[in-house]
Amino acid sequence: MNLPLEEGAKARFTVLVVCTGNTCRSPFAEGLLRRSAAEAVRTPIQVFSAGVAAVAGAPVSHNAVVVAKENGVDLTGKQSTPLTRDLIERADLILTMESHHREWILSMAPAAREKAHVVTDLAPSSGLRGIKDPIGGSLEEYRRHLGQLAAVLSEALPRIADLIDHPAPRHERDAS
Image 1: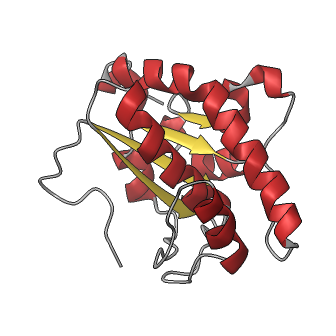
Image 2 (image 1 turned 60 degrees about the vertical axis):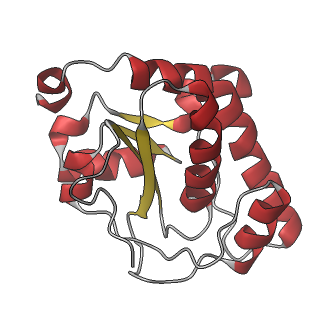
Image 3 (image 1 turned 180 degrees about the horizontal axis):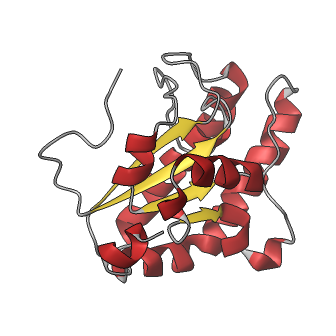
């Protein structure tokens, strides 16, 4: 399994995307952000994902792989990573799929309050309050939910780029 944020990484800014099992939404968002941030963000970044209830090394859902491929994102071979306090602390920006993921993060690391955001909060015109988990659903459900996520990320990208290119000083981000 790849360890995110390895020593010597060239990225100056790290983005952590969090969902429940790290087998559908967050890997998809990770792939989309990697691709879109390369064009929208001036700061070198590293994007990775984890899940609050992930089983280390579990494969990404087959339907997520299919829908991701339809959207130009390759999730082949991607494996889940459990969320840890260390990952939270090492991230500069955390995007969660639902509010309970953000609450979980804050219970583990209260100092993450300013850097942890529900992704739909950065895309207010979507009218969504989180991205529902398609796990166990039909391919059409995956297309619907991951399609919503792609649209939210597209709308949120300017705000995400601003958070990346103009971050608060680390001591403000790490303060409780």
